Image (cartoon, rainbow over all chains, first blue to last red; front, side, top):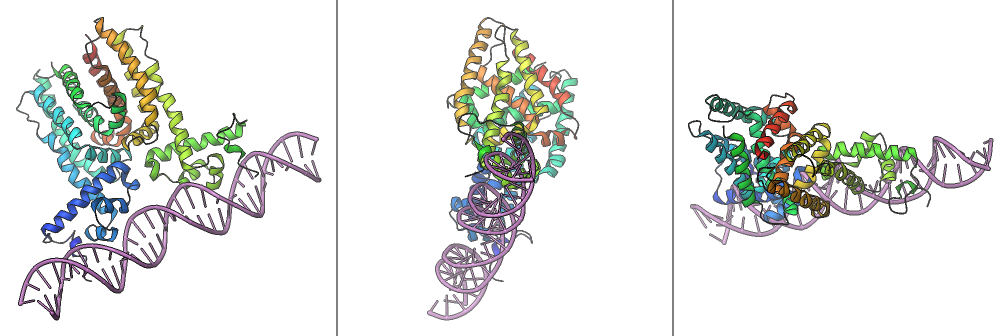
Length: 211
Length: 211
DNA sequence: TTCCGATTTGACCAACCGGTCAAATCAACG
DNA sequence: CGTTGATTTGACCGGTTGGTCAAATCGGAA
């Protein structure tokens, strides 16, 4: 048993040289591109490897399997994905807090469309690998935010809306511009959709949420 | 050359006995289930065949390839999918016409979630097979409806909204309940989302569109 | 019943794909 | 240098999958 040292995924915090980190990073980069384009099953190790500039066995030296790459990607994704939710301040101005959330989510669609599509792919196909996170962490965060929103409504600082369906609306409206990008551009004649999207969504949510 | 008569996809309108139509129907039914669950690449002919109650070669007797099944499915889908758009009456009451459209789209998400997911899968992965339809038929219909909506706005019977982004909003908000079903149910603790969704979307669009 | 085309199927194939392995190469350090 | 462990790779493997084919079976008309 000689090699395999780079794949110390379990164990207590393997050293992880700078080079190792860089190669793993490159693999995740390539994996994100390929998985988001083709879905888990549509992606091939050969394509990921060539996209990352490695041979297939070399890739498998850093991650033990296709699954491992995909799961590392999902784990990393969820962190940054749920972040904007945390940034909502229960002490702030309700309408502006929620509009800020919408704006941040829309920016993420514009700046990280591959991440959005990876997530969409996973969910559309039944979320076989992240169901626990949805039922645990995500639901917990939504429940907490729902209470904040209901408080705002009770104080009369927000129009009465179902908090959970409000969340669904924010998610679907913003992620649509990343996930359905080709359709959006086909309809808009390939113009950049984002300036228009931002003013439209600002109008929509302001109208919906202002008491 | 004996068989192959059932696969007369080209040629001038093959006879198509009742039995043939029934079997093709069963294949499309099974294909819809499998493709919408697994995406094009994730679906296997074996699974489609067994789901349809046929052997694999028998399936290939009716459709010449996996591609052919998928394309037949997409073609059939687009018909019924764009239908609700046609049902919008330029002579009707603007807000009510658009709310009716929203309601019909939401019903389609509830009643035909597999179709919605099939479509979502295709678009998320870059719409490699229906791009022409998006740029042709779909864009034409949206352009026409956009003019109607702009007319309504000019008459002061509708709040000023970007017509195309309004369409995106309707599509994303309604299809979200089919495409992201597992996420929605995870957040809502598996309750039926549709009653709440309907009242929420009615409120949202009434607020947005009422002048 | 006989016949003929339509339908069905078991056996098979070639390509692809995830993953393994032993050997080669590299790089740092004494 | 030479040694040692980390890294890289070509060759290979077994399972899966889309698709083929020749033979068998079916079903209705004469």
